[in-house]
Structures are given as structure tokens and as C-alpha cells.
Length: 266
Image (cartoon, rainbow, N blue to C red; front, top):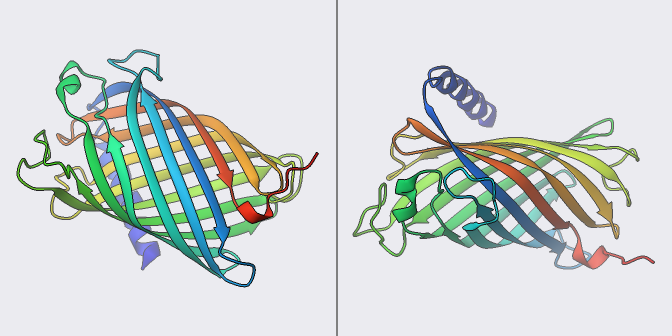
């Protein structure tokens, strides 16, 4: 079933791209950062707690100073279960998001900030082919947008907007100086591509809301701590299905995969 869904999404995305060559691309320079911490509740359980914080900045009207304006802040607590060594299912009951509109056009400057609540179910499945580490990630999101009932394009003035979103990401990580991604002091290349598909009561007509692509270099230290720095290239479809925000710029990650196992070695 999942394979059929993914195949259909990829097919429709290719069709959508093929017929969208005359659409307008709006330049949006960005800086993305994400901080993630996780651990098992104890040494004898498969239950995991996780927390991630996202902070993003953006340019204004196509300028190159990607740090000049806020774009998003969010915090998400997770509860997860490690079904097998290679499969983890996580639930974020409520995540809180505070987002600015993207600012490539003069008319965007008058649009208000938006608060959003989101519930997310996530499935991560890992696979190894030699030294290559692949991750299939599927997310099912229930989104309550405009919870302050602010009136702007796409948000009703008297009620909260609600829709669902399905996200699929394929990520590859390649160790450079060791044979195994989880070896301490490993340098690695990280790459992923992700598509976002909207549906539900208030999704509008832009089914393919986003396509995100990333390439970066990472380093593992203290056994279970990692940092990554890379470049993000992302398309966001606007509600008119004619204009796309082309967001591009650096992205920084900090991961603490297992907090209790981290060792600050001298």
C-alpha cells in the first residue's frame, strides 16, 4: 500500500513539473537550523523520548542577507517505540509553530505571522548497502493553522484552518573515513530529497505543497553527537498554483542521538 502511494505521488509530481515550466519562481534566501535530542527511557526498554527545535531566518525581496528576517520557530516533543533495530515509530502529540510569510514580494510584507499546532506520526526505516546508510521517512501530519483566526489569503477569518499533509523523504548518508556511519569521529556526506502532499478540508488546490532537497557534510563526535552543515534547495507552491517560492541557502543540524551514551572524551 505504501509503495503504491509513493509511486503515485512521484508520478503526479513529475506530471505537475512537466506542465509547470511557465510558472513564476520567487527568490527566497534562507537560513535553516534544527536541533534534535533523543534517548531511551532506560536501558531495558524500547520506548524513546525525543525533542526537536527548529529556528529559521530569511531574506526580504530577493536580497542575499538570509539572516535579516524571522521565518519560523517550532518545538516538538516526541514519544517513540523502537520496533526493530532498523524501524522506529514516533508520535508528536502537539507541536507548536510560529511562522512568518515568505518575503519575496512587496505584497508579502503585509501578511501577518501565523501560529500553528500540529500532530505528527512518523515512521523511520533504515537500510544498509555496504557502507551506504539509507533512511525512508514517512510523516502524517494533522495541521491546525491560523489558530489566532487572523485573516489573510488562504485562512478563514472566523475559524482555524485544518488540513492533512503526507511527507516522504529518502535520505542517504555515506561515511568517508570509516566503514560505518555510527563509528565515532566519522566524517560523512548526507543527502536527502523530500516531497509534501496536502489534502483535507482546507488544503486548497496546491496538492504538492513542497519539495525539499539537501546536500551536506557531517561529523560524529562524543560517540552519539553529530553536526551537519549543508545547502538546502526547496520549492513551496503558493495557493494560486502559479507562483513558487524558491528557498535556498545554508542549513545547520545538531543531533544528540543518545544523550545518556554521550561521552565527552579528552
